[in-house]
Structures are given as C-alpha cells and as structure tokens.
Amino acid sequence: MAAGSSACFPAPWGEDAAFRSRVVRGQVDWRPIHDKRDDDGDLLDQFSICEPATQSAEGYRLIWYHSRRKAELDFAARLARLKRAVERLDELRQKLGSPRTRYRLRSKVVAAVEAILQESNVGAWITVEVEEKSTPKLGQERRGTAGEGDEVRQEGG
Image (cartoon, rainbow, N blue to C red):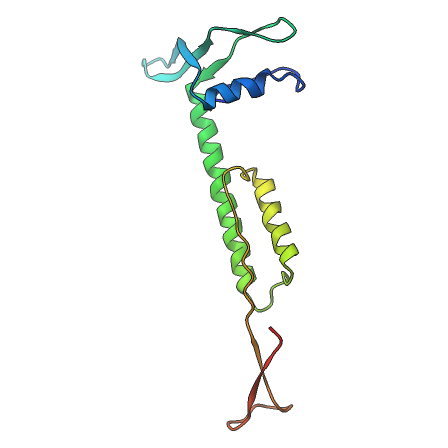
C-alpha cells in the first residue's frame, strides 16, 4: 500500500492485498481532496483519495485515502527500525568475532539474526548471509608457563 494509506476492515477480506498490489504496480490514481494548513498558512498535511472508489465482495463501498504527513511519519518510523536493526546486527557481528562468544553453532547465529529482523520488523528490507569462519586456537606443546623455546601447536578449528 502507498505509504500513508490506511485500511480498516476484517482480515479475511482480500481487498487490502489486491489494492496494495495495484499501488506497487502504479495502477492507482490519487485525487487531492484537502490541504490542512496551520494558522500561518503553512501546509501541514495533504489528503488524497483513490479514484474510482472500489467495492468489496460483500458490496461495501471502499474509499482509500492517502495522507502525505502519515507517509512521512511512516517513512521515518521505517528508517528508525532499519537503523536499529543494522546497529543490532553490527553488535551481533562484534560478539561473533570475540573469542568468548556464546554463538558457536551456525543455528544459534541464524536464530539470533532472525530474532533481530523479526523484532525490528525489517525482514522484508534486509537480507543477511551467515558465513562460517573458524579461527585456529594455538596452544603450547607442554603444560606450564610458556618459554622462549617452547613449541606451539594448533588446537581444534
């Protein structure tokens, strides 16, 4: 649906999805109907309706409206959610780079990423790839304090 448009009817109705699809394809004509101004005459909001009005399968008249101010607020809200999700994904990436990370299994990393995207409600706009990288752990050949001539071996990874 066009940013700033609103729909309010029962979920089973398919009109909302059909209308959103028309908006995405650019098949909706909007007619301005009202400019809201403050006392100084500055434009605060502009309201438009979709023409022609449509009818639901049950015969109800559907009037789709668009608010320029609501579109601006929706955009700002989406941008804030995207920024927060990117920050949280960056924090996760830093945790993954730490030698003391709790995320040792790919499935845990994928679950953490999905949780961030779901909580932020930005999964439709962000694609994340999880790449496995193992870092070799080095250790001494013998127990005790490392000395100058001690040999080092690679453990695991």
